[in-house]
Structure formats: C-alpha cells, structure tokens
Length: 435
Image 1 (spheres, rainbow, N blue to C red):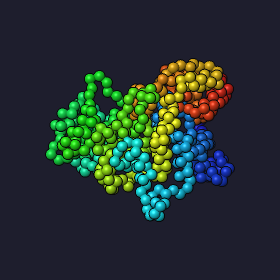
Image 2: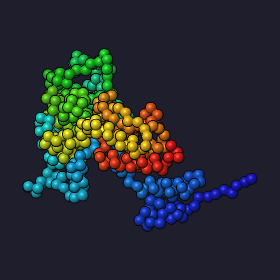
Image 3: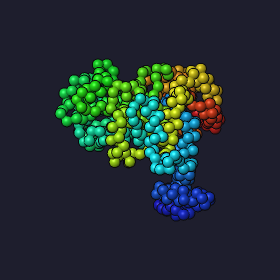
Image 4: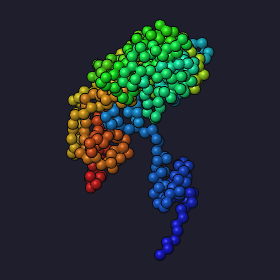
C-alpha cells in the first residue's frame, strides 16, 4: 500500500506554531528553518531547537566533576570581588588607555605591569590573550626567525591538537630538537649552539608526567649556559603559580618569582591555571626583551581587553594583599575534609541512597598531572547516562566512573551545595520509576 508522501510545513507556519512571542520570533524562524530539513517530526525538532536558541550558552553550572581547573568549564573560577571588578568594567567606560592625571593616552599594560613585577621580581611585564600567544610573540620577537632549541621530552601537545613544535615553526623560527624523549642533558644543548645567537626554550609538560629513567637540565643551568654563549633563555612555566603549593597539600611547583630568580630572560605563564585569574598569557622578565615583544606587530593582534585586565588586576591584588587563600582555586584545595564529607552526606540524604567514599580531586588545566588532593565524594549508586544528562541539564556537572555517577563537592560553594541537593531530590522524585 502506497503512503501519501508528507511535506514539511512552511518555515513561517512552523515558527508561529512553536512560538507566539514577537521578541523571540527570530529564534523560532532559525529553529523552524533547521527543523524542516529533518525527516518528519518537524514540530518536536523545531521546539527542541527553539529552546536551545533562546537559552544563553554560557549559563552558570555547579562543578562537581572532581577537577578544580576543568578546561571544559572555563578553568579558574574568579573570586567574587574579581567577578565584581569585571562586571563593573563591562558595564561602564573605563580608562583602559587613558591617563586620568594628564588627560593623554595611556598604556593598558600599566594596570597590571607594576603588580606583576612586584610579585615576581621581574624588570618588566606584558600581558596578552593566552599563553600560546605569549610563546608565539616571545619567539617571534626575541628569536627573530633564528634557532630555537627544545628538548624532545618537552615537545608537548596541548588541548585542541596544538603542538609546541608547530607553534615554534609558526613563530618563524627553526626548531632544533635536543636530547632524547626521556633524558636530556645540558651538554645536548651545548652541542647545538652555534655562532649565531638563538633561544633555549624550556616548556612545561602540562598534562603528562615522565617517571623512571628521566632527566632534564636545571633551569638555572640553562640560563647560565644561554648567557655564556650570547643566547636567550625562555622558560614557558605554564601554570602561573605565585604561591608555595606545598601549603595546600600538593607537590612543589616552581613559581614565577623562582623562574625569574633562576635567570630566565623571559618567563611565560597562563592566567587561568594556578594563578586563578582570567584567561591570559603573562610574560615577565628582561626589560629589553619585553620591550621587543611590546613593539612587535603581533602584540597588537594578541592584545587583552578591559575585562581581562580588570579580572587579572583584581586577582593579582589579592596576592599582593596576602589573601591568596580566598582565590577559588586555593580555597577549593584547602577546603576542610570534614566539610566536604558533610556536603556528601547531605547530598546522599537528598537522593535517598548511594555511597559516600574517599577519592581524589584533580587540579586539572594542565597542572599537576596525575596528582590531586584527598576528598570525599558522593556516588549515586547508578551510572545511568539519562540521570547524568538530567543533572547536566540542571547545571550539576559530575562524572561517571566505575559504572557510577560521582559528585565531588570540593569546588562547590554552600549555595551550590543547596542547589545540588534540590536538583537531586527533584530528579529522584520525578524519575523514580525509571531508576
């Protein structure tokens, strides 16, 4: 028996069917236009797409993933007063490049340069939009198309398939591979250093660690070698750490001040990792080389906006004032175990079953690979993706591990714990037949 072929409704008719709010008509048309391309079920598809269109994409979520610096969730959470500074700058005009004293044009870097030099002991500082940009700018300005020597053990690939060798080549420099994957010695660098000056580059290993029969030259030795041969030493520190991480139950991590003290000509770092601020690329070090970076044409393409500057300045001020423990990344690391366990028990009560067990909160964001801080976490007793999806749709982000959904409250605020409890209770009541 032949069925009569059905045809989709017009875009206009479908748009009016799914929405009667004139202010949202443009979203309805977009949703309807996509839906009529589907094979039947045009109205449900259009309604689903319409709801996606009218909902802002960057909505707040509760990070219970067990990762403090979750790249997918925006890495570092800003302190409330830092967020207020960003909001203030966003909602008003700001003297980004205007000198209020003289009435003349100013330098946007002035807002953060003096704090960075004070905190790190560097002669000068420059901020760009991320650390990869800082690497490209530093090598383009300092190496000038010359040789860049990098250990094979540090030829990392970071998220999004970006590889350090490719970044070096994009900077217009010639990469010289040094040493072996597991072991590189100072003499390996000495052997490749020719008459023409170049750059010795040290790159943090980001999201992996080498163990066993491994070695790398000490940064201070690389700095001394570079100086003795008229080369430059650029240290891509990565994490942007400004504190003694041992205080927070973590292994020792070199700080920006220590990297500068080791003699690096330039030290590069991210703003949204262990520094705990907004995404940014930070360059500190030799005044002459910072000047070359500032004058390079790429510096304009990598310039930070007023929101980044506002967030970074406010975060750096907290370090300057000795209030780093209030910065969310460090507040999360130092959250008392008893408090975390109480939060887990409260979520278990809201859910009605499950398990509270010890675990580990990872730092994430390319910091301390394989290392974390002890925590407690709540397991729902099931690993159903449908439940995990409903949690995500309600803004609660956990993880599925060993066939079970786990929620780690270490990174959540008290208000977020209450919200998560409410969500768990609502899902349990509404979906009990499915569970």
